[in-house]
Image (cartoon, rainbow, N blue to C red; front, side):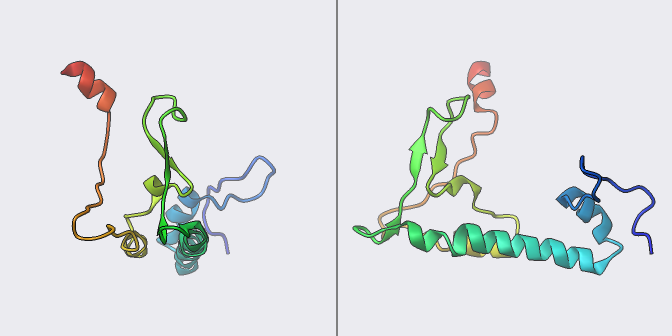
Length: 125
């Protein structure tokens, strides 16, 4: 059985299993959606569920990130150890991971800001 008439191959000649290729095939083959779901779950587990407990600062009992302004070529802030800017929000399970991050107490808030095209907006102003 042939999955598709036109298929992508890698540079080494293997059939591609890239997300875009599998997403295209998923509508016709349930197992491919299962593979994509599995990949997403293992990514969440290894990147957040398994890793974040190891990054808790013993003196505070909390996870702290390092903000860097000199890493990104644009001068934007980047977040490392852990990268809190990449915590997923598009999937329900990703939103559940985000719920693990809570303010220290009621006098504090967590702020999410999107600096989309900020340089262009500043120049325009």
